[in-house]
Image (cartoon, rainbow, N blue to C red; front, side, top):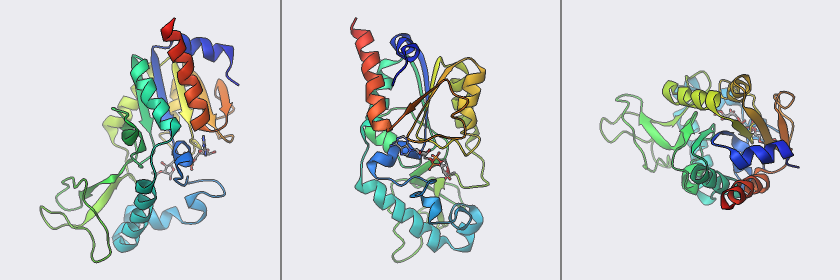
Length: 247
Ligand code: OAD
């Protein structure tokens, strides 16, 4: 149920910041991390999502990333991703920040995406640090190698214990501080610093709305909760903005 305050704000919003998490891709069939069906209930982050693990057993980590890439490549964006493309077209100052590495925002057509945790489709060389995008890193035969220096490639994602790309996070923080409306969508708000963005927005006077199928650690702090699936709720919000533009 969308409140009249949110409806009125959407009708005049000029500055909107959105943070997405794994839940926005759930309706595309991409598994989330937490929760009963989440990846972290079956796999251990300390064995898969850190650099030490990669150094210890790169074959295993590449196998895990190829498994996830296969799921992502076999699916596509859902109505929630497409709704965010419309937001970008409709709202003058729009910032999309994601914790997801699944590339689905770009595949939907979003032009600018601040990827806090990297992108599973990109890689870089551990030796010369050069990017190695669009390579097929199937590890059926051998580990993926850099075409420049022969070094070992790794996925360009942020693992536990690693720093977020500072410049991208700063752009996200600036958007959170200046926006009128902040939407936190499909994230458990359990991983910082990303989870700090809605709190930053609150501190700077934004109206913060959480869109999630469940309660999260920050639900008690936000201004409004839209409980349900992102793919159903976001198109409704888009419709409100579109109708206001037609008047
Ligand atoms: P989580 O798996 O922690 O949370 C997913 C959230 O999405 C949960 O709160 C669900 O209730 C919600 N959800 C599920 N289906 C939904 C739907 N259809 N519509 C709306 N909400 C839905 O994922 P993140 O918060 O993104 O980090 O996790 C944050 C980080 O933890 C990830 O980026 C990853 C992980 O470890 C790294 O890899 C560094």
